[in-house]
Length: 218
Image 1 (cartoon, rainbow, N blue to C red):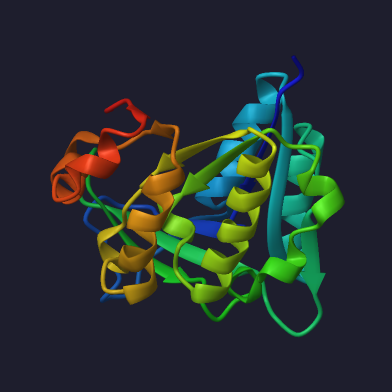
Image 2: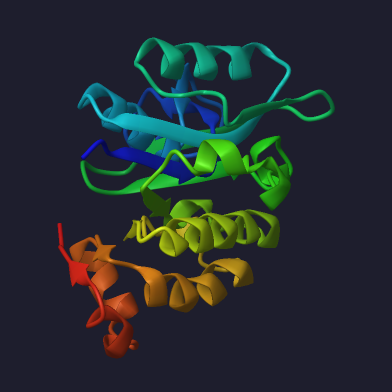
């Protein structure tokens, strides 16, 4: 059976603080830009494993968008689901490490090109080529994005496909009401749940949903 996996979400550039504990409240130097975005990284790794990989996202008509698309295409990702928007800029993220396991972020996503993605950007013909849909929790930052996720879930499930869900929770995004509201809906359709140890407590309030899928903790 040929497997083609699709995902939906942010496509952005990342800037990494040069010093540990550098933070964002004072001037400092950063490495970058690097092509990034959790769904984009996932799609890239799928392609490198030799599987079909489709990413639905939006970028601006700028050099950051060009860099992201070029990287994905060179690694074998199907980029036909990426829209280039003329009146928006490509998203960005600034990252500062406090330790090996702890990071702080500043995201520019809701007001960037990827934040304007809607269900209308999800091409039915391209989606019909996919038999598995992977969801990154970091992408659930707007009702528009969530509507696009719903469209993909309904399409995949109607064809007996499968859904996996990596919560990928960022503390900087937990105050976004759209995100927490979407979790329970997505879990109802999830076949493979991939929380980290720290995320198990967050989802412990909904054990029934967790029991309806396979889950693997990292």
